[in-house]
Length: 399
Image: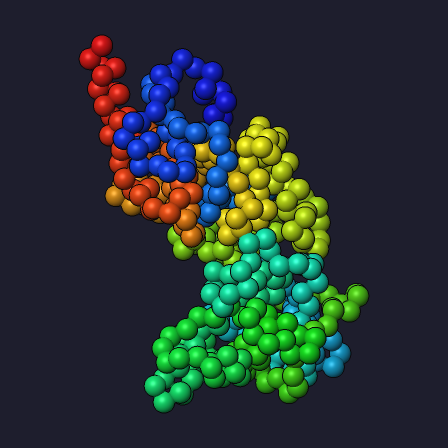
């Protein structure tokens, strides 16, 4: 049931004096069957990662919980292997090794070159909110990206460079990236590394990792890797379906608040509605349609530039996010639990948000707290709201 239907009922609506005292710039909203607390509930704020709830809701509606991303493999007459990606966010080292073993089962033992095809995405511009930092939360999206486009490496005190995780082999890209890093563990956004000719750092990472892991699976790659489209008419010899269903991907996305995964989902929704290739514009159109026709909200209540919440151009009112939470309730178990509260946090510089559900008997009560201020006191605000709502219920019972 949408919030606008709920608001038509005769609820007692008021604010929480203690919660208001904690807020310099922000708003909140919370309701149950009898009481309704709100403050600046229609004002727009930066929602940060609480926006991922909307992205996951749209993905479930568009793709279905059992949807699995695909990666296609082709072999030409010269035994060159073409790899065409369609945005699987879980092309990890373990998965690539399994792919290699499956190709080996087809009798493949030796390849000429690896050709990488990322034409199913046409992301000519960086995503909104990109800071071009080396942090993994800023990693770029792509049709054929491995390990979330984050490069794990370790630099020893004697400057020796090794892989930062046992399942990922040492590759040349790690050696280059680690040459100027201080000792310690690092996980680097590959987009900040140098371009190698026509190959983006994303494709170089993909090419190097596939080459080494195919060899571990018993398939020798004689030549190198490069960017090349799959020839027309060539049929795939193997189609890899993602190791995780959409429901499992969403659970991981929300658990780790992974920006890369969220925007892979965002782009996949645009493909579903508007076809290949994926673009930021197509996905924004899909989300705008959902906002206006499913949520019955307008752009002056919520604006979405990308799906992770990283962009400061995203805007949402507490009321808009509450509307989203009402529709997301059947999937609420996909959220993390903190002190028995199902919760999605959103955190950026001077942005501290919560959205989720807290239990009341057999019910789950949705709540939203959006703070765009220097002080992170969202836990105190949430505690004040819960206490005030409980006191309101006690007063109503005694009347």
